[in-house]
Structure formats: structure tokens, C-alpha cells
Image (tube, rainbow, N blue to C red; front, top):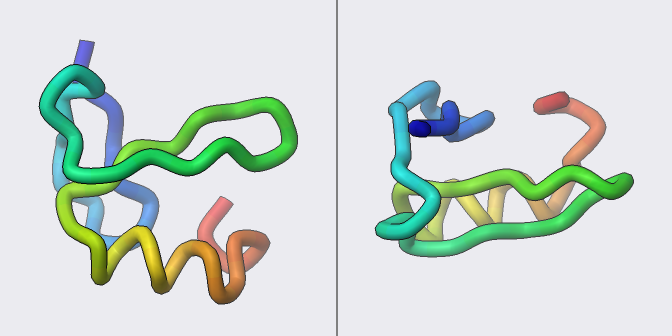
Length: 47
């Protein structure tokens, strides 16, 4: 089941996501390294 990239809102399949990050026990999936890096800079702004 697709997950929403918390940065850009794109739907991403976990199996084909470019990157993922675990934060507070939840895994977030990203369409690009740029989105992953933006999330890592300030995760609380996006959850």
C-alpha cells in the first residue's frame, strides 16, 4: 500500500521508495533524496 511522502505529498510504494527514515517508531518513505534530507533537517515540521 502506498504511503504519502511527508514533504511533497507524492504517493510512494514502500518497496520502490528512493529512501526511508524511521522517526518516533514510524517509517516515512520518500520519492527523492531531497525530500528525505528536508525531512531529516526538521522532522517535527512534517508530521
